[in-house]
Amino acid sequence: MDLTYTAEETAFREEVRAFLAEHLPRDLSEKVRLGRPLSKQDHEAWHSILNGRGWLAGNWPKAFGGAEWTATERHIFEEETTRAHAPRIVPFGLTMLGPVLQHFGTKAQQEHFLPRILNGEHWWCQGYSEPGAGSDLASLKTRAVRDGDDYVVTGQKTWTTLGQYANWIFCLVRTDPTAKAQEGISFLLIDMASPGVTVRPIVLLDGGAEVNEVFFHDVRVPVANLVGEENKGWTYAKFLLTHERTNIAGIGFSNAGLETLKRIAHAERDGAGRLIDNPLFAARLARVEIDLMALSTTNLRILSAAARGQAPGADSSMLKVKGTVIRQEINDLTRRALGPMALPFVSEGLEGANDGIAPDYARPVTAQYFNNRKLSIFGGSNEVQRSIIAKQVLGL
Image (cartoon, rainbow, N blue to C red; front, side, top):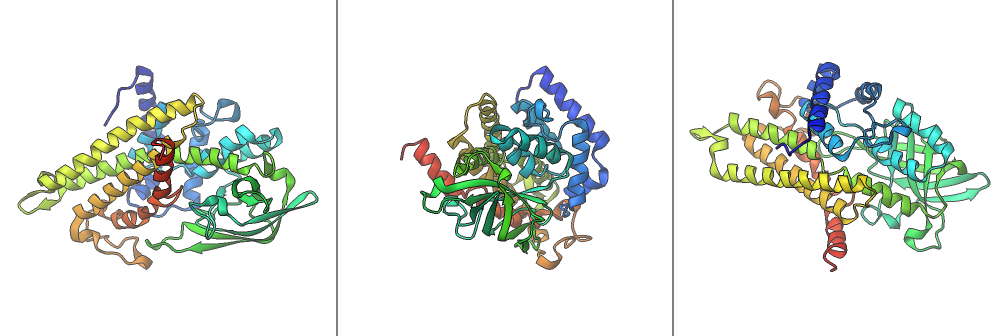
């Protein structure tokens, strides 16, 4: 599925491949390939390896310690790391908060927080969604009341991914309850070791607990941790969500999933022949591969525009919707390709459910299928993203 690359970009791809071959720990790669849960130590180890090479923050300017890669280089890096079964870079500090601080944070905030994101001292999570305020994020109710040099924060956040590992959380809070929904929100940085912060895991359909509820009971947060201006947090939230949705297409994950699907379709039997030779299955596989090629090209175009300072707008919604549909279709086709081997599913003991009775490529399929049902909801539900596209692009 290679696009046309320049000689410099091809050389960069070879450099990434060589780096991965030498520095990606084999046991860590095997864990990812087999769909095993990754610990906090696994993520930290990989982040440390990348940071040592200067590749942890590919989207950051060099002035802040980033690699300052082009959109194409970031695309190549994602493609090669997923192909090599490297752990996904945890995005909350690096992809989401970092750019917000670089654009809207004070010099003191940049000097304090950005190096700690890179060296792993701070592990960030995202405090946006609440019960009753998911896709309709502007209806959030977590309040921050000014009290001298502090804000006192009370409320609840939910679906907080990897919050059990985090020691800091960036939050949208309501600082003016009398203003219109979007106009009374501020962007706060909160130390999760503060008195009054409680984290409670949410067990998901696949038996894992990668998301959490976070409760704030009269948590005192220094005013110095306010990003930008009070009541202007919606502006910063939209900036962050644009970065999140631009990177949410999951091209690399879909490419890796497609390669696995093809491997399975060539190995599994359908009656007297191979599954890949079944015309109906082959047609569905071809359709999703064509869609993925088109999405890859579109993703590069939008990332290039963003690198030139153009706000993606509804384009990022399109990436989110189409990327979700493609990844879920690949998951569904993979599950169908495995037939009975995809059936074992015990949420309390899913890990290793197929060990000894199925090829290694069958092990993570059921867990991935169930877990990735979330893709059409998080980051703004696909229904909401389609409404954005209808309004901003079609004028409906």
